[in-house]
Amino acid sequence: SLLKLLSGTHWGTSPRILKTVYTGTVRPTLECGARAWAIAAKTHTNKLDQVQNMGLRTILGAMKSTSIATMQKTAGVKPLDSRMNAKLLTQGEKVNIIPDYPLHKRLQDMTKNRLTKPPPCIERAAEETI
Image (cartoon, rainbow, N blue to C red; front, side, top):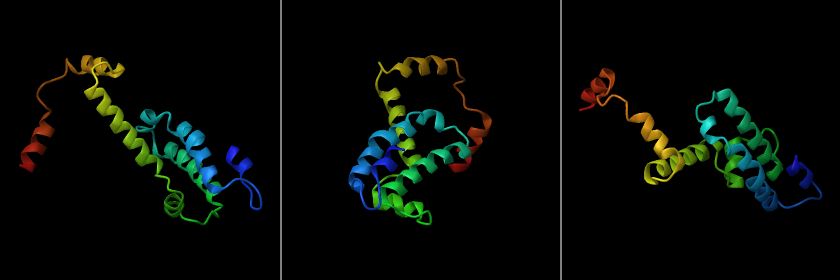
């Protein structure tokens, strides 16, 4: 991997530069399918987490026994699932707010023939919370 080529124990670039390379090349590749990964099985998203963890170990020079949360905090890198959730929320807001957004019309067309009354199970749940 590019990060491993740039790093070394006695030579190589600084952790700051390695983090820049990671956030500029590796992480965007991991996040490019955020919408698809939102509904993927946990076993598949775990593979993405493993790639991020390998990158963090390379950046920090950490051992395998170092906890993932500690590496994320030390490197200043958010977990992938929270970043993907933020991307999904941002995209959802764009769809709702921007009328020219590509998915806006498509979603409106999909929902115009839906029932206006919620299913009975949702009505019961709403009554129970009141």
